Image (cartoon, rainbow, N blue to C red; front, side, top):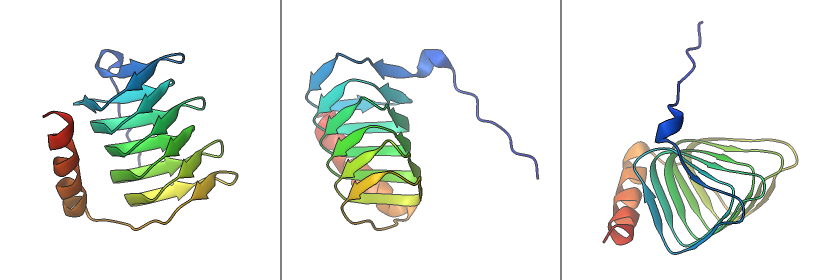
Length: 131
């Protein structure tokens, strides 16, 4: 079986750099990488990468996610949540699929969800974020 790598246009990836703190909600139509911190809700119709030094205090809802840093709150993922060995998740997680590397810290419960369940949750959160 041949695996086709998904290409990402670097110009379509938003970035919150280390040393940057956002106090409030964030909405992105495309991929986003967080290396700083967010205190609020993060909604993305793309992939979210939470870097090793990143801290999110709030709810995350996205189509796919790589977690290397810390989330203090719940995360909802339409497709795959990948929790890396450096990650700390202090909250519940609701992915369609997930993988966890040895060494990751998780304090919370999980429930796998359908894409339809995600869409309902995402639409509710996004409508509050983009008021």
